[in-house]
Length: 289
Ligand SMILES: [Zn+2]
Ligand SMILES: [Zn+2]
Image 1 (cartoon, rainbow, N blue to C red):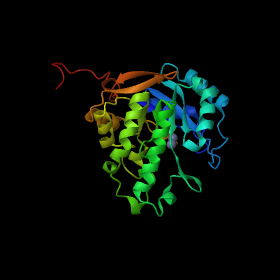
Image 2 (image 1 turned 135 degrees about the vertical axis):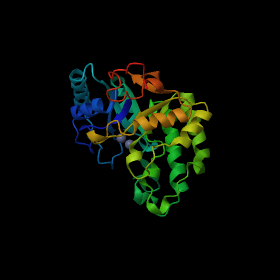
Image 3 (image 1 turned 90 degrees about the vertical axis):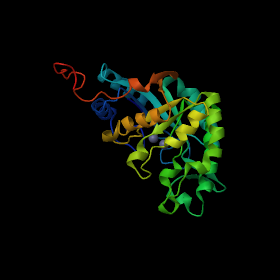
Image 4 (image 1 turned 45 degrees about the horizontal axis):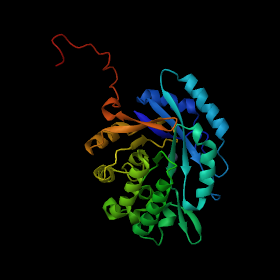
């Protein structure tokens, strides 16, 4: 299984050393882990100025040596994007992107007349879901059209932060807003991730869920990554088996895997976890029951 969205102590909101998450990954049956720490250019963000690329890359190298033969450790980044900071993001990627195996582009802020605002519950006050999602998808579309990112993080994340008064989220209402996003993804060969953190948090559904995946497949798309967005070692790998089942039901046959920003397809059939002991369990005489 591929966990391509894991945070470490190089993110402002995470204290977990890489080795701890690597051990958890091996135990969970994850074969490839990507440490995708936050890269924040929004000046009001608590993570602004926190990222230390050189130290991060040294830590990835150390994890690669420590878990050699057990786990593939990838260098990644979750780069926050909105059109207001596009020039800063472009400069960062021009300087650093070659060091990464994959780069996630994520929209966490909404642009408002009074400045950028994180898409947290408070932002929903006085706004309909449409007021939140349509401008959000416009920013996602802009992120895809840059062609700078390998995959787009948590595609319908506003559903995670929608307060109880707004819990009537129906992706169908935003199918039209997603259509140009899918077209741009297919044109620029940008993937999107299935972020399983939603399964264990409020929406109790992955971000995005099956209907959005199905529309993307119907539009001709086939590039999908998987990640848990773990900020704690015990959630590394969580929700990936059920996500592989969901993707297969939606007609997705392979995941997008990355090395040094180069993509290849890995069949989902090859990614399913082997049940503990089944590889070595003796077949009873007369064959399996
Ligand atoms: Zn994120
Ligand atoms: Zn994240």
